[in-house]
Length: 204
Ligand SMILES: [Zn+2]
Ligand SMILES: [Zn+2]
Image 1 (cartoon, rainbow, N blue to C red):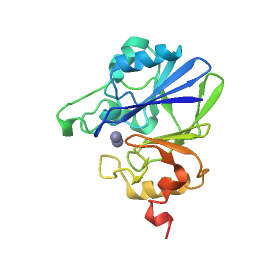
Image 2: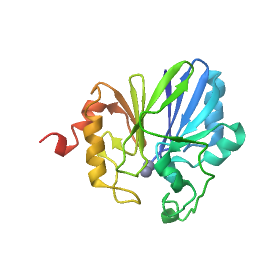
Image 3: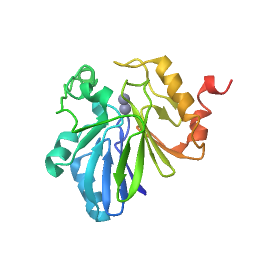
Image 4: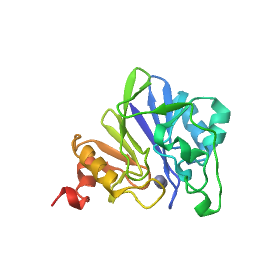
């Protein structure tokens, strides 16, 4: 499986395109649709779906245009679907944007599998940043959304955030292969092992 990282700079969220066997999946459409289109064309890949790692607005800035342009299913964990239609819960109101979206076409659950070009992407439910935050395990890659960054875990003070849940999620990620490369929702990639070294309660 191939991954393309499209970062949207400063506080903007990373958008990832996963590609396998001529099929593509966009994870967190935070960059302009034209940018995504250009990369899909460059790869000769057909978009088959969109996944949100969680329901925050900054990970979905071009979601509506992308859905409009390609008519592919939007997938999100069941517990974050309510964020899409609620500007307070998806945090857009906090930044004076008031964004709402149509609900997802397919609700994801822990252990679920998304098929892409004959390969499988596994859904790991990792609540803590939001109730329905997920990580996606795709081969040696782990897309962590705002659950885990290179320098620590994500904020727990937004709607649905929970330190207790975040700790459970960190324990869960700690069971995975530390050599996985993580692709976070913001900033740089690193290995899972190195990112988890920054989680104090795991390393006491
Ligand atoms: Zn977030
Ligand atoms: Zn974010």
